[in-house]
Every structure is written in C-alpha cells, then in structure tokens.
Image (cartoon, rainbow, N blue to C red; front, side, top):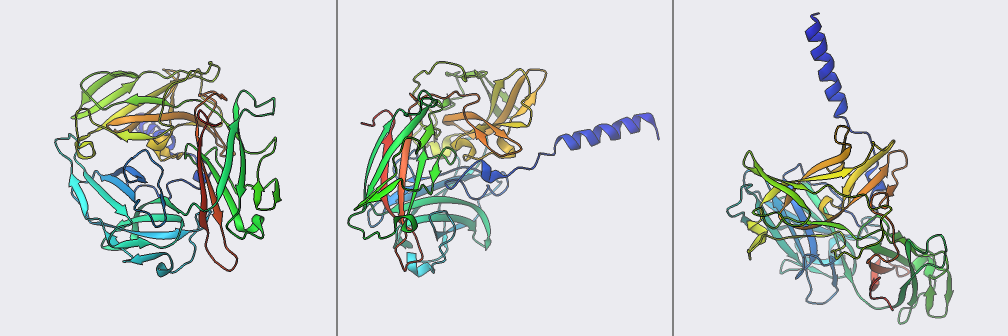
Length: 433
C-alpha cells in the first residue's frame, strides 16, 4: 500500500479514537433534583421550569392555591412541531408512585402545548413553547413530587424531555438555623444546619419509616442531602442536629457573565465576533480561585435568566450565540474530567459540557450554544474512576459564601402508597439568625 495512504488511514483512525468519550455514570453527577431526560437531539434548548412569575424561582407550588408552574423551552429545528405533555406522580426518591391518574389529577392525561411563537428578528431561528400547570385541562389533587413529560403529539411514547416540580401542603413547622461548624477541620470551609421538625398536627408514630427529609443547596443536585436519619426523637419533635450532621461545603460564589447585548463588551467578556452568520463570544480567561481569599460577589446561585437588552419580549427576541470558556491550568488532570456546571448545563456532567484540555494553550476549553441573558456557572472536577464531583478544586471553599437551602419533608401515611410533601423551609446563609 502507498505510504501516503497508510499515513492517511492511520491519521483517520487516531481522529476517530480521540472522539470517543470515556464511559461514565451520569447519576454520579446529580442526585434527585436533576433533569431526567436529555433534550431530544440538539434542537431543544433553554428548558426552564419555575413557579409562574419568576424564572429564577423554584418549581414548587402550594396545593389548593392559585399558584402555577411554568415550563418553557425552545425548538431550534427548521419548523414548528406539535408537542404535548403529561404529568406523573412520584415517590420521595423520584420513582413513579404507581397511582392511577385519577388519584392525583383531574383532567386529560395528555394535553397539547398550544402556546408557541416563532422567534423574531434573530439570526438563529427557533420556536418558543410555553405552558402552565395546573390549568383548565389539568388539576392537581395531592401533594408530592411530579414529573412533566413533554412528548411528540403524534407519538406519545416519544419523550422529548422530562422536568420535575413539587406540590406542597405546608402542615408541619420546621425550626432551622445555619451556623459555622463546630468541627475545627471544617470551620472555615463549611456551613452547618440545625434542624428539628414539630410533628403536630400529624400523628406520626414511626418517624424513621414515615418521614423522609431532603435538603438542597441552591437547588443543585450535588452537595445535597437525602434520607437523613434523625439524631433523636421526642414527643412531637424530630431532631436532626448533631456536631457532625447536616454539613455542607460552602464552596464559593458563582462565576457570571452577561450576554444580553452583542453590541458592546460587558464585564467578563473578552471579545465578540461574527462568524458565518453566528455570533461568538469569548469570555475572559478564568482564574483558579482555590487558594484565593473569599470575596463577596452577588450571584443568582447557579441559575440563568434569559434577557435581551431593551426588549420586553426576550423569550422570542433573544438570539443564540456561541460562548467560549477558558480555564487555564498547567497540565491535564490525570483521571479527572472538568465540566462547566450550573443550570446552564442542566446541573449535569455530559459530553456536551465536558471541557477539552488544550496543551498548546495550557487550558481547559469549551464552547456552549446559549440564549442571550445573564448566567452563573462553576468549573467542577469529576473523578473518572469514582464519579465523585469536586466543586472546590477551581472554586475554593468558604464558610462565608452566600448559599440558599431548601428543606422538604415527605410523609408516607400508614396504609397509603404515596409520599406527600408536608413541610417546607427556605433558609439563606446570609440571613440566618
């Protein structure tokens, strides 16, 4: 065989091998508050679920109230498609409860998404979809965890993606306090929660079997606690506080960038270029904050908000742009992977948000296709062998970090086959007594 052909064949083989991603367990990167299904292909973007009124709010509503959940997403395919949705009630660990539909909802099982609009004056065309739950076609009857499934209208077995929301009935009172840990090894790096639950008016006879507790930091799946055992139980009170219990890494404030305009360079942006009809935004090279002193920087705790400058219709007028991330480091970390992490990546570690090491530039790099707005993010390191996620390697770890905590109390009444959410409490590290 001609030497040139041998060389070419070898080169193509190496290229193909280099494109194969190592196997990994996605569940190691998230827990029980994650996006269940990946977007169907690459055409679905900017999926958000929240309490109607603020896209930065948690997807939680009170049973029997006038509150509702809003779900939005964009389809970047060539034409508008017909999508529908259905909901499923789940247990405290997000497995299907096994209830029949009429046990937890009134209305139609599958409902069409009728609210959609084409983007206006954008270089990247898309269709924006939106709907609320509950609505005239669907009413919710019981509290608990719920999954929204967005499906193909003409083939309901074809699931586009899944999202989670919760319905609560705030019956129980929670006593909470955040403080600096007593443990000397974690005093400067962590935050500790004191927590007890008053069980009146519920008749809870066996808290270890009937009550399940979940605590989330900034609503992210990692660095959360689930199925926590009580320290002791006394009359009408379940206590979870102990010197070594309910400890969370403080980590650091989230990094941020603002791309609501492509006409000028804002803080954190190095350059804006137009290439082949699409905009590319290069962020400033990031700093390794691991050994830096804590600095109080306002953030939105890992979330993002779609926003186009001087627009009242950002949901259909904001464009999609390529955003380039750079995290300098002197060498590639052995047996480790580095990811851009936050709501912008669905709080997951997937090939789409895994950074590649550039030996020539001595930096980890990644580009993401994002809708204009304000974004928070972090760099996280994942151990390939164990799947463990380290959020402190590039970010540092500080007790002083502003973090929000969400506490949910699940109750499984004896003789019933589903978990209710009967207690909820929010607490912030900056505002805790």
